[in-house]
Amino acid sequence: MRAAAVQVLEAYRQRRAHYIGEGKPGVVELIRDWFDDGTGLCDPANASLEPLAPPVVVPRECRPVPPIGVAPRCLLRPHWR
Image 1 (cartoon, rainbow, N blue to C red):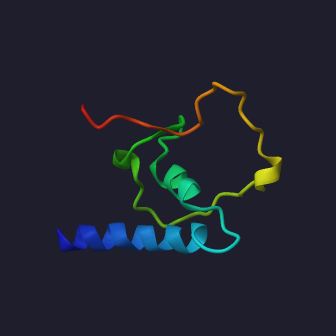
Image 2: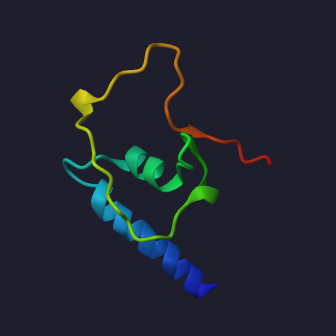
């Protein structure tokens, strides 16, 4: 169990160093990168323990703004499976 915890913490540390801090994408992008299953649905069950391969981040000003009433790209699934 300790080895599994070490893997999770190392994956988190890598992503935190890339996403969290002044001028960095932020926690929402960290969660999207780590938990997105590739279809836009986020769930901790999708978390990858592979080393971080940082995606190319599009500056916030260049991102398209979804129309009012459109759900965000990354949705959290309920955990009542």
